[in-house]
Image 1 (cartoon, rainbow, N blue to C red):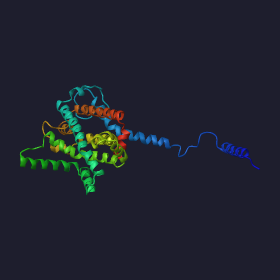
Image 2 (image 1 turned 60 degrees about the vertical axis):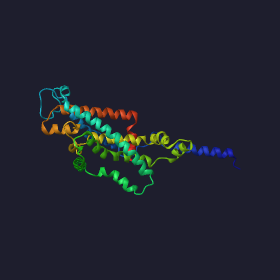
Image 3 (image 1 turned 180 degrees about the vertical axis):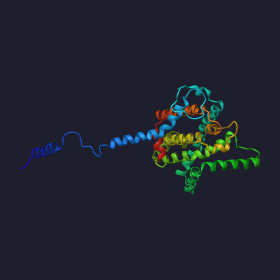
Image 4 (image 1 turned 30 degrees about the horizontal axis):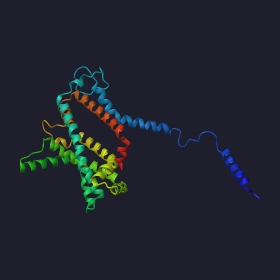
Length: 303
């Protein structure tokens, strides 16, 4: 007759035999032995491809000596002389672009967040069509958008005497038009995964709709808002096709100022100011990573 002690002893003996039969040392590697080398080689080529244009611009901006009419890389006499010779027009255009991009990001959030809430939670007919309309600016070529706004401003000006082309508000309207879909898309992606029970719990505890939105809904959708605002800022800051139709002397954005400078006469100070923008963008990305986390922004924008 087998006792419980004998059964336990037999079980322990079987486990010991299985452990003894296992191979010694680290587990065998899977895959080809040179797979890691190819992975590192591919990543290195990707980094070189992405970073080499910026490295060339920054390096050429440090070339000292006499005035030159072409990019000199690597620099012969490293110097910061061209950073001190950046024209005031470029600095004013850079300030205008930063102001315009920040205002565009804010305006896109003001329009995009309610639009996303209405698309996801609204009980209105034709939500699919409305969602398509909000995505339409992404499908229209930017140069067509610029021409359309220019023609519209002329028609409005002929009818009312108030012309918006060549003004800050005309630029602002064009940039908000193309930036709002980014906020709508990122916030919609978050709202589609939103747990409605969180809001129901807030309502059951006596919170009104505004308090629930401010203290429950907004913190949850905040990654989507940050991602959309970041995309809107970048799109507005680097826009050329729309701005080139809506700018005028006194309201020239930074990309258009660089475009005119390269078109008329090459000036090494253009490389210096472009290098400052590269450094600013790098600092902004590092700050965003520190405060929010780029992984959160990219994850929110890709779903």
